[in-house]
Image 1 (tube, one colour):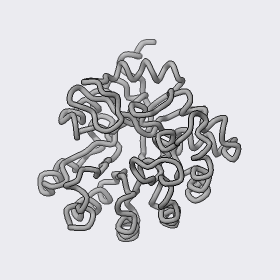
Image 2 (cartoon, rainbow, N blue to C red):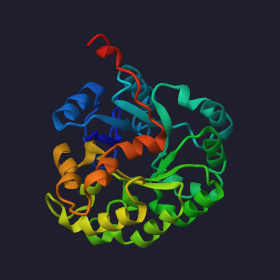
Image 3 (tube, rainbow, N blue to C red):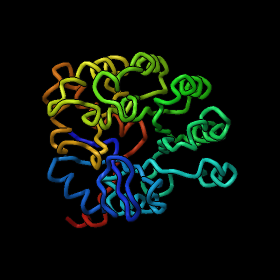
Length: 281
């Protein structure tokens, strides 16, 4: 089984936000060591530019050095549309770049989905064939309108669409609105960070039913495993076995899709060459 983590971070400076490991840097070499120990074949890096302004460059360097291990969902500034439009032209030609990801969790960004700040982004990403991932739970009704207006734009709901900082049943309070978004064929869901929403220890049984409902709505081609490992309350291996061993409704070909290939297909990440470090091996 190929295992592709749908969300990881690396950084070279800054103070990580929230529950992330409070270290000044987390390198690609450290990430690879952990991935190899857990049996993770590849991962999609989400540059944490909110605390490391150089995170895009750090991610692209990792993807350039290890193209069979890493892809990137990067960022351009959202509040400078003219400059950013130019940056997104040919975005996929940059090392590892397969799309974009915006958490939109800062206080000053709360109104951006509604006040026109993001209006330029959706048609540009659609035209460039760039999937966009976001923490959509704050603006699910507007997210639905974006999906409807831009049917060729592949959208990704981060972290199961759950309510940030809530746990257990409270985290799933908006699950009806999230599952309703599955009616749009251009919307998918990253089941990343799931253990962080549990009030229990491994195997986190209080989130199993919620995960089942989300999977039933989106299916194996639009429901993606991942960790956001640097803020998980458990090991990488436990994040894997939660899905591969503890969810009886997820088995066979469907499990194989969920654990990596489906996300790779959704963002258009084609692994076709060895890393420079592996050349000659």
